Image (cartoon, rainbow, N blue to C red; front, side, top):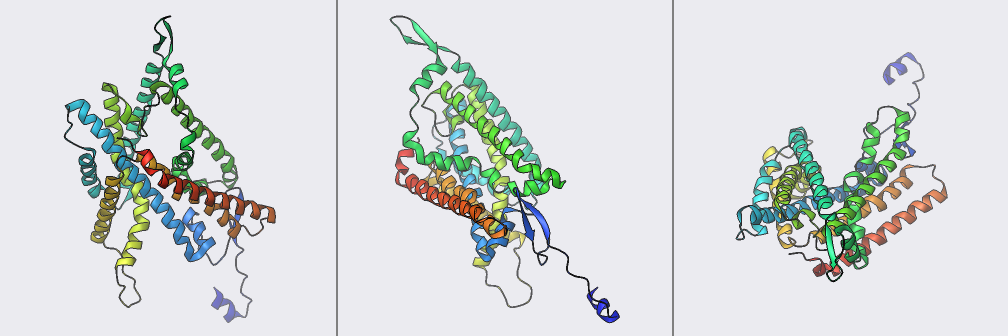
Length: 391
């Protein structure tokens, strides 16, 4: 060690060279003072922005809570339709099913080991896969039916064709579409970097950006294809929650399966956000005693904070129970756009020291475009809030 070298009169060895870690298609120099760790979005933000990286942490956390909020609106709507179809129950409102869901989610949110959610996540994935296949089956069955368009001549055409001709234009909904499109990719925004870091061989890590772009392209293609097929099959009357717009025995099964899947997915979606929000709330609400050891959150305190967060999400869901489309758009525009377009280029400019002036300028332009898009989409969604009501 250093002291042994001094005692023997030898010159201590030079410090090790900075380690290199992959960041997208570029290389980030890691200072030797940093302890090497897996690169994540929050870790990159911490290195780039220092204490101001809290805004990135909050953005990721609030984005996840926003997704949980959509779950609290989506499930009651589907269960309400199931109740009417299966039992003929009309006395139970969506709010009743909302608070039933909250009662279920509160104890599940107390789980502190994410590995215990593996089984529920697998079940949820299977139910979602069944729901998607069932909806596509119903769409093709209904879309391939012939519809009489002229009773005098007996002219008929496929329901696919007729519904496509009568679909409402999307132009008035342009700004909500911006937020919705970023909400659609919320699962990958914060996971791209750690996914690349998890690849074992460096040569495979270098291939990751191209592979990701290819995968993202086909995922978006699937989204577009699914939307076109279902809109052409069911027409313009479908709501934001597609499953809640369907009727029939199979539709009821799909609604129930999707509701169970989302209920099981809620704690996994909320878990990373809880890990950010609970310590922050603890520091804000606790007076730290003097001493070298900082207080930590006890299991009981964590459960209380988790309960308060779930109840708070439920209260927001109460006042927005008929505005699922607006919530999706607002969460995507106010949190998704900064996480996807604003912070990444700024982080790149801070960490990649050998970037050319042209690259830095392009990054600033992307960040500016993202900020403008976030502002316009968010404000427009708020100003046209009442137009997005769905009963």
